[in-house]
Image 1 (spheres, rainbow, N blue to C red):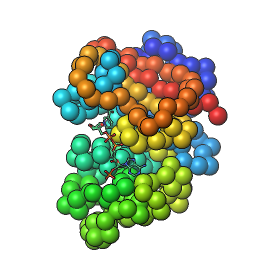
Image 2 (image 1 turned 120 degrees about the horizontal axis):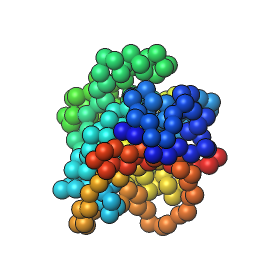
Image 3 (image 1 turned 90 degrees about the horizontal axis):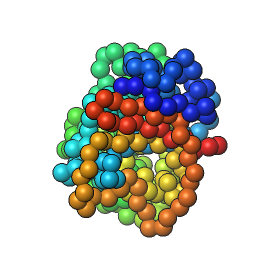
Length: 262
Ligand SMILES: NC(=O)c1ccc[n+]([C@@H]2O[C@H](COP(=O)([O-])OP(=O)(O)OC[C@H]3O[C@@H](n4cnc5c(N)ncnc54)[C@H](OP(=O)(O)O)[C@@H]3O)[C@@H](O)[C@H]2O)c1
């Protein structure tokens, strides 16, 4: 994986990233430096990570895994290593059969050395509460998930999720407002957030101006089909972003990072 471009804005201020020259081959430490969260956070920083095909699809053969490349997989693991919490919509958790995060022993060591809990918490947003208490989210998770749900969720489902070990937080309204997501993350003490989608949740966060940082992998494929793009919402919005850096891998994968100017 090679550094193709580094912005003078933001990334150059991050520890370690200043020493990197365009064209450098990147070891994992250098990649971590390029994706470091700001060090002076006083609120949740919403980073989102997505992979899309060249023609803008978020899935190939029905799953994002169909777009995966070695560089994207490497970045996926590094981004999880750097975060307090993985924020995800229930649609993605169901479609991708999410379990808990399971970092390696080395990753946990680095996390703890960096002031993080050994394992990031998965935070799932759902209006309906339709998450099976015997799904991998609950059964294959050393750290049990936080489920943020709405007043319209079925109370018996919430009770079953609590009995299976989840922390269930109910907010008012038919769905979970962005302000409630941010307040919940703040209350839980999570600031370094990694939103892994999906397009419904990201669309809401984009529309509400809540995305600080977007990591977008372009997978070197054309797939056509009828899959959607990385964010959708009822109404359009316009958030200018600044390019932080572009990495490239020899198979054609492009890894881009975009920051919302403060
Ligand atoms: N390419 C990629 O990087 C990538 C990343 C993620 C997902 N994907 C793909 O995207 C597809 C899923 O798309 P999607 O739009 O359905 O994903 P999504 O945003 O994860 O799921 C939508 C569902 O999540 C819950 N949800 C999201 N935001 C909510 C809110 N603010 N309040 C309450 N509930 C909320 C609702 O669940 P309930 O129905 O339970 O109320 C809603 O029906 C899958 O095919 C997945 O593979 C691709």
